[in-house]
Image 1 (cartoon, rainbow, N blue to C red):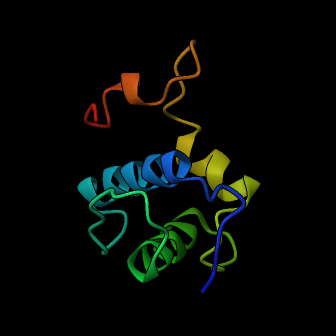
Image 2 (cartoon, rainbow, N blue to C red):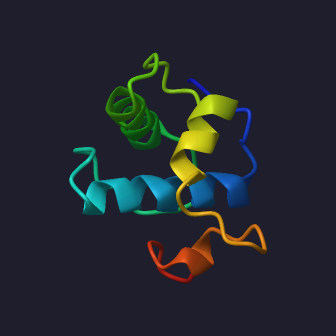
Image 3 (tube, rainbow, N blue to C red):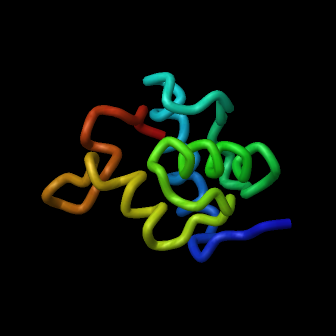
Amino acid sequence: MKTSMYDHRQNVFEIQSALRALWNIDAIATLINPNGSFGSETTRAVEEAQRYFGIPQTGIVDLETWQLLFSTCIDSDQSFISCGLFPNP
């Protein structure tokens, strides 16, 4: 299974939350329910997000993918959840 450089459970949950936000704006087709587990649905959604961003579709959350997922949603306190796109856990 593909993994991510950000494979800690909380980071995976954050990635999944960002992917769900992309689904909410019709940028990707795979609906993600954040659970902290980097499985096949997450991999598929990451590939769709990478296609949306115009970068290689590896299914792996590298630094470029991470930055693109969160670049528009980083608050001054480095909290992406407070930006309004994501539900509070």
